[in-house]
Image (cartoon, rainbow, N blue to C red):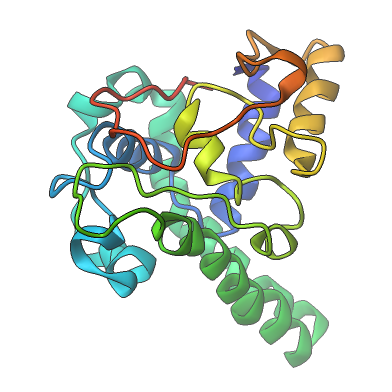
Length: 224
């Protein structure tokens, strides 16, 4: 999808505030992951390097994916500025709760960020621990229902769906796969704040996602 600049920058601010990193670095890593899923080139595969690598270690040890190769379309001032703003925004995110006392400092700073970080990391670790471990290069992504509660029903836990149709804005593909993020997108679209929204290829938004499939060899993540 493509978002109105005001919406795009607002959502980017809150993503950075929640510890997701800057949009250029995040997108480069994400596109590399889709292009090389579960191969030795994958930046975060648990199949290649184990659970803790996929969950946390890769963030500090894997190195940055090539921006010129994986997201040259985002290498523009409107996205580069978030790399410069990331440190002050994270300092604000961590420390601003002190205005409400020590309880606010710990609950709105450290505890909130730990909760958010592990929620995101589970997508790379637990949501990639399906399939046969003896078959590198075969996509190990899977849907994890219980993770929906941790993600506040935003839909990222339906990760198998995302790998099956990585260009699709909708992550929950059946009525039982709750995806509040999708309904926010629909609302933005009706307000004229989102366009070119990619929908599932299957009728009525339902899809039978195969248990395993070869990893895609090209990145297929749309610029927002």
